Length: 291
Image (cartoon, rainbow, N blue to C red; front, side):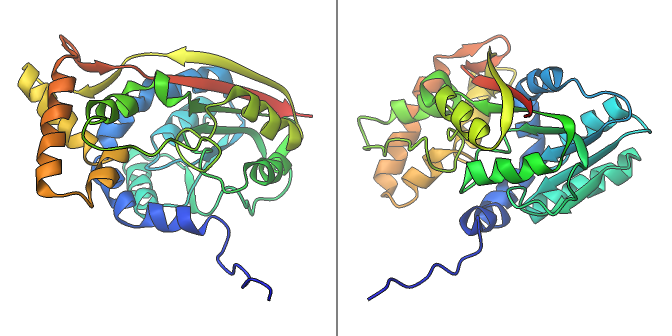
């Protein structure tokens, strides 16, 4: 007997994920997340080098912070289109664009199945928006079609968990309490492009040429505050809002949750410095051009 056909639309799981409670949490703490990830986006922005008059597609634009930076760079003669699958985040992006008076277009759509006309853009840009495609090679092949013949792509994606203590440290702190599931770096998620060889393979198979990767690392301030305790309070809120800890602890008992919170807080307090709770953060800045 033939197995039943999969009738789910492409990227259905990610679309549900970013339009459900997770999307609402990211919306509620969007300013916090934008501030913590801004430096990594700027590294990709510098590599992208958007020019006045260019047309740019911002992939996974979220609440629009990167789209607005791009709009300032390309000026009145250029154009910026932000695309995302999260309706809550796009709603915030449109509100901010209106308040800023910036003519950025935002579309709720799956960037892996773009509906833009061929040769629409000079530049494809993304800050952490390209790691969630269910079929990345096909997605990048479709995105490449939207580029002009001399177009280019630039994006930031996380290096492996071992180089990103914002992810790894809380998990390590509770390793003696709960067994963790290894990260599958070939599945959609924050570390889907942590392997440089996979990035080159995916982009090469999608038809891109001149693929280059540059490592970029800078502190990620997981907690801010006037005192070490305030820093820890801020960090703990974020650890339990986004990331793997909340999902891991949700089905556990109150006793396990209490022990885990104590262990994570103690581990984070060790990192307090003048600027906040500083953990490691490292990305690949990836650039390529149409072949």
